[in-house]
Image (cartoon, rainbow, N blue to C red; front, top):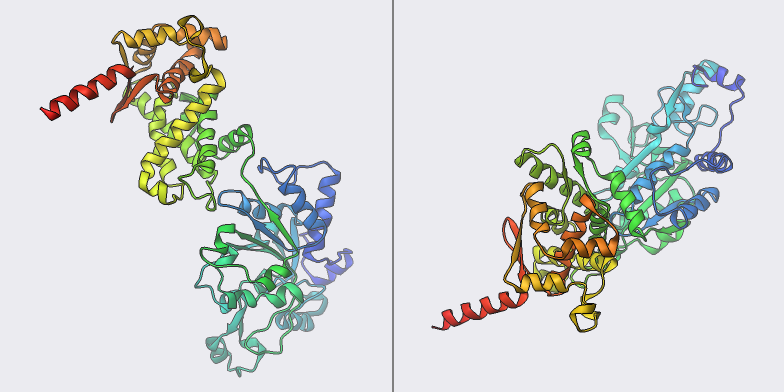
Length: 492
């Protein structure tokens, strides 16, 4: 209908006004009946969060999304735009997106009174009907609601008692739109109070003006539970006026987490073509985040964002790409040693408690990677601590014997694929162990062969020395003897 240009034509077309909440409700009903996906790109919430949001929309409720960082709260709010009509008619020249058939502002009423059916009608796309405001302590009532504009009063030669001197804030200008306030607890309590009337009665008050604007707004608020104790809180009367509070959560399975990471990671076409991340390492990366959420070193109230694995995946691919460029290779596959490059993505994404501060961000990151390696190792190979005594029942016997013979293997961070495979193939019994337990062979065996070395190091069967540019694996007993010799020399 966006070809209509005047109020008269709009009336003749049969257009009927409806509130934004009714608009969202009706469009949601149509999508549900047509079996269309309502929230494209939101994964892991199909049976929990999304049904709650759909119920809230059907109930025409304002919504509070409550959850830890990195749980797609803002993404969900932005996707609500897709439930709006594609085009919406407004009175041409009005500041508040006035409905031509139901104007609320003095300006729009004056325009209609002057032009009648010739009143110009403009069309606003649904993307322009989304307003988002990050709550910060410096936000004022004037920013949100409005204030008297002395410059307008002087230029128009109007008294301060004249309604036309009002400069409307973000909320009135969001009339017939979706208005999102992120991090609601950061708003000062007196600013939160200014939202009471809008939520309950749908009107606003500015500087004592006897002004009633029946605003039509769909409110969506987001908040982090930690904010209730750290930075501020949502005052009880305001929380009481928000009809639906919906709790978000982190991905509940590794597979869902992998899908989110793949979807959100920003890689170039060249990176996608030249690099490969085996499934084993994708799972290992997600396991790092799961371990972080259960770690005693990390503040669970703060949470561990999904951005950790997204940034980690990008860093992992870039580490592979850099190694490929250094060695003049045309393609390369990720290794566990490449997780050295993932550490910077971990250290900046976790909030440490006192014990974590004592370990330091780097130490915590290495600890998390180690725990993830251990869990991944146990998912594919027997637990070395639970094996029966005797070499006949020990699948790691040949590998132990090889290291006990004084052999060691060094995996350089930037070594070529040829040298990497040669180093792993040189460990007696390593390939045979992988092929017999996992039924993999050829090139597919190398990621698991490397996993075995790192896993045995986590169980203290072999010693792993972490150097600036390499990982060195050798017999644990030989390492202890070296330490004793060093102590003796130091004593002498």
